[in-house]
Image 1: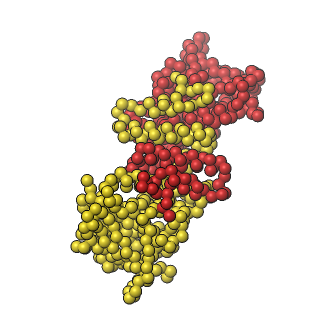
Image 2 (image 1 turned 180 degrees about the vertical axis):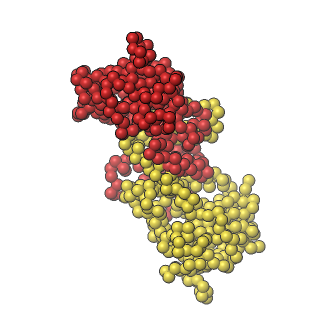
Image 3 (image 1 turned 180 degrees about the horizontal axis):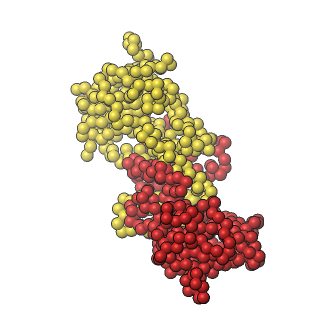
Length: 291
Length: 291
């Protein structure tokens, strides 16, 4: 026993021992994932000579993330976000799912504020029911098409959500009505959707938990560039989760959760002749057919 | 923005971008640790093509570990233990702390059941107050010495704790009195300590949380070989946290938390002429002087 230990301490022999402890009934995928995870975790600890105190500080952050998480908040997710992991797995998942010649609209991370139960609203309607004084109303519209043929997709769903100018989503803010700045729109026969929303503004991610502590320790700010979240879905097509970013926003270069990608920035143009909106945003979406 | 993205997806350029986001006021140690952590986490995700669903399953396990943890249970720690991480950082910490020529007694992981408030007891006394029917009482004794000079160390503290034969520590088991199978002993002028305890038996680690789920997914059992925990401390010397293992126990080769090391197995010998104990265990401890 203990033969994994050498005079140089617990090296690769120990790591092999831990990996080989997996039994014959481990699924092939689990074995692949855990082999790589154990190898990288051990290599990390050895490379930096991680001490027991440092490791325990990490354990305490994990436990703290779990204690803070609930139906309205996923702090474990947020901790991953600030080290770029959600953006990375989103990118991997997107590329695995879309191996067509013409790539569909780029994906981006879901984030912790999506709600499954957002209401379906009429095209041309609004999602801003508590427009703040500093809010700039925008008419957002576009067409959903097949990424390869360009054919318009009727009855596609465009599910959007955004924070208000105070940086809060409605579920974080008692001063917003239920499902403010949130809604689902169904495309018409020409694949078109449209609604009034706010021109988004930068806001900080929650800073009172381990993700905030990690940002402080890394001497980083907690801001995200101005963005609107959306999920587009159509029967027979791959679902698309993305965020679109105001090209004039601050923090595009240093998003605290690293979600900004090429092809996701959009231009808010002045809107003429519409008493309801100051800005106009056209955003077209290409979806990839399922194989 | 988003220039970290290439046609091959988020590669090393993206990882460098996340690492370089750390600000100038990051401490040098934090920068070292987070640089290696971010690099390994990203490399892991890319190597196995980790999908968003797999990553979210991992996030849920982290959050679950935090929800289960409290003053009496540290599930985040246990999850690390089953992939060998606590054993590894313990080994690193031990080797960093002891660079003398004569290495002191080997260390081992603390585990989640130590209590800071264990009572000081008399040498020659007992820690087994609810001896179970299948319990085999053992007289444990030994000498604490300086690892280099061999000089006996008086007034050293030997803090011991162990599970009962049902596999439970007293804080897990309403049928054991407070601080059963737990106590601190102070060495005499010759550095000697002694007490009656149980010959330890194998037991399973808690199996109802994410650590248990991970073991199941890896097709591994949850048992630990028979062991007694101890911490030895003496003024002017480095503190030693260790576990000693019964050399005849099952699971020495496949401890579920990988804590067994060379030099930590001990022999329980039959004890003659003592109506109170069936077994005798001599265990001597060497401590390293602080630099």
